Image (tube, rainbow, N blue to C red; front, side, top):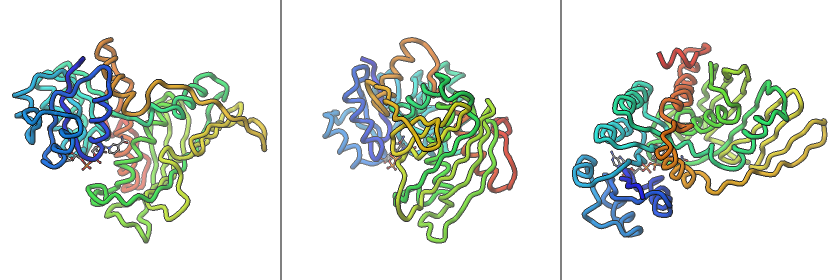
Amino acid sequence: MKRIIQVGVGGMGAVWTDRVANSKSWKAVAYVDVSEAALKAAAERFGMPKSRCFTSLEEALDAVEADALLDVTPQQFRKATCCAAFDRGLDVLCEKPLADNLRNAKTIVARAKKRARTLMVAQNYRYQPPTQTAKQFIESGRLGDVGYVGVAFHKGPKFGGFRQEMAYPLVLDMSIHHFDMMRCTLGADVRSVQAASIYAPWNWNKGDATAMVQLEMENGGVVNYFASWVATGWETPWNAHWRFEGSNGVLLWENDTLHFSNAPAQRQKLPLVKMPSVHQAFLIEEFARVLDEGREPDTSGQRNLNSFATTWAVVRAAKEKRPVLISEMLE
Ligand SMILES: NC(=O)c1ccc[n+]([C@@H]2O[C@H](COP(=O)([O-])OP(=O)(O)OC[C@H]3O[C@@H](n4cnc5c(N)ncnc54)[C@H](O)[C@@H]3O)[C@@H](O)[C@H]2O)c1
């Protein structure tokens, strides 16, 4: 079993403590959280001894031997957490988004490279049957050339906490999943974006929480993305609704069901691919596999920079009212 230190055990961290406890490849050797209450709850649930629960990451790294670190802190702590781990020779699996800004994201990726460590970002929306089914169907060629894609996402969550205070909470915290799913299903990076950001009159967040984005992919495909986090009714799933338009027909992904259609009023339901594990449970085992096999993860920090830079390119495009190249963000 590989040994992992989990940093951040409250909120999303509580999901991860469970996935690590049920992993066949990993054993949690320490918990770190600035909240005593979150530490106590996690320790009681999974029997972590008090001597292995820390409010300071440095103390944990001094006291406990480990192979890797799992970072489930909010993104403003990502750079300090990940870099401390790399400097101690640990590989890292971190939550999305990769950082709180582009400069810090680049620093994290550079530090992993400098220390020759693996950095994998937990883009869990890739690792579930609908995404993998869409990806495999497009790869099979049955759709033909994919010309354009429409994505609609509408949710009205009231999270409170840091999301309600941050600028562009939808684009920076949520849309990263959808942009990463575009790269996964279409098998291409994002090349450029144009965007309009909307502050709905009833928005309960400080920052804009609705966006209209056009994305051009490196393979020429174009995506029209309309997303909102302040829906007042009839929501879509978290995965959103997708329509991939190809030269041979249409792939529809609605309510987590996929259909293929090549006639105006007919469609055929597609079986979803079977996966032994999904989301965080898949990621934690995949993290062990990439380390054992010495290969770069599909969601390595380096590769994830394209998804991450896309979120910030959307912000820039909306503010400056002009198309923005992803390469310009990564200069
Ligand atoms: N992949 C997903 O579907 C998904 C879902 C929710 C959250 N997330 C991501 O997970 C991360 C955490 O989000 P959350 O909702 O759990 O946040 P949260 O604020 O609810 O919880 C974060 C936890 O980290 C602890 N923490 C904060 N700063 C810390 C520090 N410097 N060192 C150690 N512990 C610290 C907090 O006390 C808390 O227990 C974010 O980056 C978020 O985007 C991902």
